[in-house]
Each structure stands twice: as C-alpha cells, then as structure tokens.
Length: 193
Image (cartoon, rainbow, N blue to C red):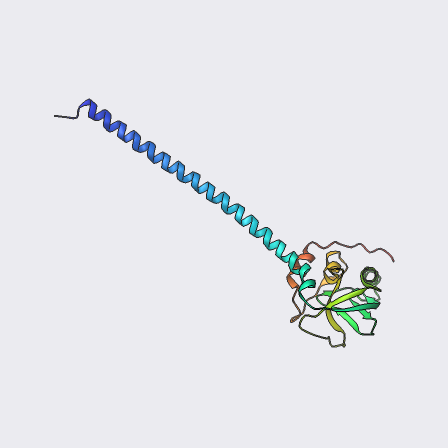
C-alpha cells in the first residue's frame, strides 16, 4: 500500500509550514541584526561626539584644574614672544610665527600681522602662564602656554593662521590639539600694516 492522498496532503502541508517557519526565522533574524546594527551606529556616533567634546573640554578645563601664574604683559616682541611687567620674556610653546628680523618683504609682512594679532590679544592684559615640562629655552625665555579669559593664545594663533605648529619634546602637552587646529587653520593673505 502506498501513501494515501491525505498523507501526501499532510506531508506537503507540513513541508510548507516548515519552509514558512524557516523563512520567518530568517526574516526575524535579519530584523534583529538590523536593529543591532542601528543601535551600534547610534552608540558609536555618541562615542565619537564624546571624544570630540573631550578634546574641547581638555583645552577649556585646564584653566580650572591647574594653578597658573598670573602676570601683566608689558610688551609684545613678535607673534610668539612677549615681555612681562617684571621684564621676563616668554616664548609661546608649540608654535612659531615669522620673525620680525627677517628682511624678506613677504615674511616681514606676515611677521607684522602675527605681532599685531598677538598685541590685540595680550598687550596690557593679565595673562595666565601654563608650564609644560621645560622651564626655559636656551635664550633664557620662559616656555609657556598663554591663556587670556579662558582662551589659549597659542591655539588661537594657529587657528587663525598667524603661527604654525612647532612642537618640540618634551613640551608636547597640547600637540594633538595644535595638529587638529593646523589642519583647518585660516590661510592669511599679506596685508600691509
């Protein structure tokens, strides 16, 4: 005796049910996978934003977390060096601006622009000095990060194109922040001052 039509029909229905269940399981698994990917994307996006904010907070919060010497700037020598009211000279860490002694017209033009910007930010203002590792350079100038009203002058000069990044170990506390700023720094056009 062979299979009866009812048994064949039941077998076919069972097979259809198994195929349908298998498709549903695959569809459900795909749905769960998509939800997990979506959640992971949101999580990673949040972490990236937090990391960017951490970099910003690091620079902005230092003023609260560390003790800095407060002193008045009496003279701006150039775009990266000042003289304090007590006659000490300070060389900004991590940056380099064109020298005022350079005789090439275009370099001198940029040097004057950098000096003028530095004067606008710090001259006759009380600044805060932040030491990294080294105390002084070979010329006896203090090596410091300069802060005015919670803003780092060194970083501002890089962002606005008045100075280039120039970090020298061991004084590299803000190197990564300076590098990031230099990638999007403004490009200056020499304006006669």
